[in-house]
Structure formats: C-alpha cells, structure tokens
Image (cartoon, one colour):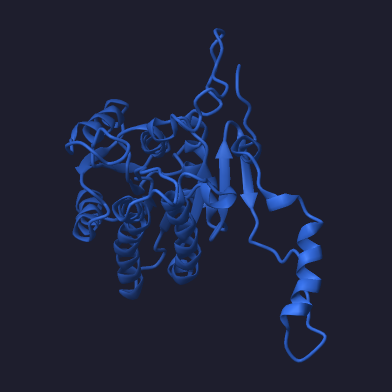
Length: 315
C-alpha cells in the first residue's frame, strides 16, 4: 500500500524545532522527501548566531527512519535565500510539490512601546518570508504548467495565528503579520488554482519555544502521561492532510487546530447593515443608528485570551 505523499517532495521552513520539526517528520512519515529549512538561531526573537545543527538533526532523524531529507540553513526572509531553497528541492528531488511556511520570530511589545526595528523584523520574517518562498514555488509550478506538463501538483500550507483573529495586546507586529498571511493565502489560492495548486492557512495552538510564555500554566499531561493537548504532534497531521491529494478540494481555507480539534474558520460576515434615509449619511443619522447598536453589545466586545483560545489553566 502506497503512502499518501509517496513520490512527492516538500519544503518545511523553520523545521529545526517545535512545530516545524513535527510537520517535517509527519510529511516524511507519509512518504514525502523533505527539505528541512531552519536558520538555527537560538533566540526566539531571532537573536544569536545562525547554526545548521537544528535542520541537520531533523534531516538525520528522517533519514534514520528510512525517509529522504536534506537540510538547508538559511533566512527565508531574504529573497535570494528563498530562491536557493526552492532550487535545492528541485535539484535534490526533481521537483517541488509541497511548501509549508512555518518560520517565524517574536518581538513582543505594546504598540506604544514598540520600536520600528521590532515591527519591521517580525513583519520581515513572517510575512515577507511567506511571500518569498511562495513566490519562487509559484514560479516553479506555473513554469511547468506553461511548458505543457500535465498534472502539476502543488500544495502550500501557511502558518497564521489566532492572534490576528482575537487580538493580542502585546503583539501588534505579530498579529498584523499573521493577518497579512491570511490575505496572502487567499490571494495565492485564487491565482494558482488554474495550475493545480492549492493554498491554505492554519492557526495552530502548540506549546513550543515560541509560545512558552503564552501557554505557561496551561494544562499539561499529568503523572499518568499521555500526549500534551498542546503538543505540536496534534497539529502536524492536518498539515500532512492539506499536503495530500485527498485535500485537492480544499483551497483558500483557514483552519484552527490543536489537541484533537480542527475548526474551519468562515469568511467574515456582515453583522448588521444600516442604510441612509437620505441621499447620504449625516453625522446625526449615524449617531442615531450606530451608537444604540454598539451600546446594546458588551462593552468593547473584548475577551480574555483564555476565553478566545478555549484553554484552561492548571491541571
């Protein structure tokens, strides 16, 4: 019996640790040959010297399990590095079939305290990084299709976050980048569908180096063991599915995933509509319509992070 991803090749960025590592291992388990990308910096804020060790260790783990993998050290927020990453997959495995964008950093600060560099660096790694790899993967698939190749296969899985859905007071840069990734995903899905390519985004909840502060104190496995409900291993199977032929009909979608749960996020809907009784609205008319509407709703319509994420602290 063949594996779902047998004969396919994949790139996973930020795959040296945490979520990316789990995703790379899952794709390999399902039969894909994997390019394991990571810049290898020790700090979750992107600080420290780059190191090939994290990516090489994951690639070695895949090969030890009987799979095929190569490591790539590089900052995918650099345009030419992203080009080289896609070229490596094509050189090593003949083509690229799956791109999983996962790499990211954090520079948390309230909006009134955030520096220009803290804003730019997070937007650069998350949003520009997603664009860079997507661009070169899209060029690869479109070129093959234009050359007359039948059955071009392409899958993009991007990593967004509920920070853009629910808000995250101390992460204006991160929330903005993750919202931008959803926009990039839906645009890409429309642009590449004609070439046999799908693009989807996930909002994962996982306990990793990136989220150690967010999930500090939330329930972990007890003495009896069991899989942590926030383990990256809960997220990886969805990535494997979205990368597979079975997900050919899934395109331009946003899915939240964690601990045995997958939620499909609907596109924004109009909650209420008001039409002017005249040719154009006046301040007074808007005041008479909108002020009562919002006064009838909970003040600010804000929620604690634990309510939005559906998580409970403690054991």
